Length: 267
Image (cartoon, rainbow, N blue to C red; front, side, top):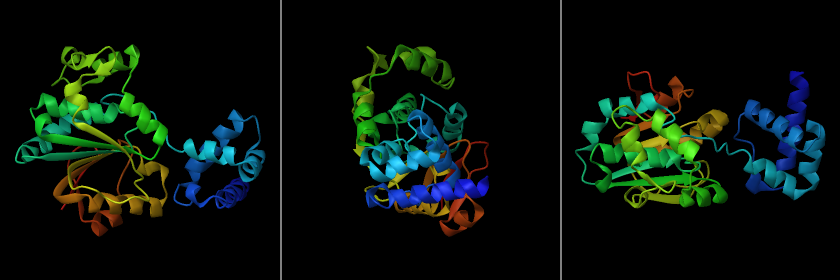
């Protein structure tokens, strides 16, 4: 079965070579296999038939490639992380007159807005700029619109840290949109963490649930960009299911913070 899956994925890689801008070589094989199964079912095809469609019809390849960006997020999706940010990073951030924060793979905007709320609650938003990036033009457009359902906002109120509280969280929204005092500190850009370059040095980088979709080469490229975007002491927050391997910790001179969250620091 494993050999059959490898052959199917080999066909997928060959199909993607027809359009170099849709390269799949840096994604992990388990992730690609899962996404291929998803799209085969969506198209009512077998995986082999799906690959054939991807090979001969450009729209199928574009549809599949756009689906590699998993745009599922929530406000304060990792609540414990914000507790640890308050404990380990807050005093350090207060030493800067200008604070740069990067939300990598910002999806629909819940994560950069959560960061803005956390900064405002700690008196730091006025001196902060949050750079929110995603590789999808369509997703960036939706993030800029920042129009959330009542259910999404209500879930955020339940999930926000105790230091903020539900009532204070809800006060940051008007007509299902974040108030202007939050939005004016968030700059959205189309940007690939694999292929594009750094454009600023950050004090905090939030890159949650991105590296798990890439193989070792892809993860190395992402960490290279994040290193380039850091200064001495920059903090890096990953998703709760992500880890940086010991070899990469040494290569990029990154230290794991001694806390349950996936919080790291560039030395």
